Image (tube, rainbow, N blue to C red; front, side):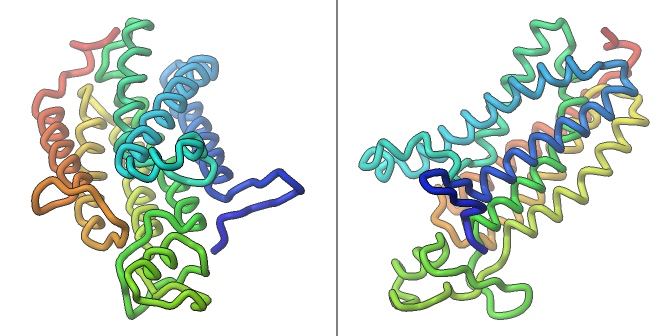
Length: 267
């Protein structure tokens, strides 16, 4: 794994940026396909994904900077260097949800209706984004001595972390083997994606798809957090991401319990 995809003189293109772009393009294609059956044209999808993309990236980056604030206060020029990696998913998720809410208000679309549509493409885009994380070396897992453990090259985030902990020396060519948590999460998202598509296609209640996602993804994220090897913010005995996951699962259950028959909420 190497974070740089292409380097031409002063121009450096990182794998993280390449896969972020692929994630949004794939999400857009999925939305267009789903929207076509719903009578929503490509222009509608283009407008929606623009605002979701901007708000998602902004929210994810703000959360990342806050999580490592001392570093960014000492290196303020790195705050905007998103192409090098550095987005926290839940920060981006909250930003995207706010964008959907505002977009729906402006278009007079009920929130549950628009959320159900918007969330269908989220797992496939997220899965591709996590592959970018894997190639970039960020969001890595804890030490692992058996398959499918992965050792990352020198100067990568896992290598630097292990060096700081005194687990390897500076002349080490590789980090110690770690769980490829990024790929685990990508697989989990790929499993959720067809479930949401089926629920959306045959749904009879608004909010059902949203509720399912708010339970399924956070459940996987909560469990995978136990395998993470990065320094994390904590909320008591659990990580901040796990606390957010529990909160989202509670919201998901509420969505399921209060989902409305489609005829009652049709716009």
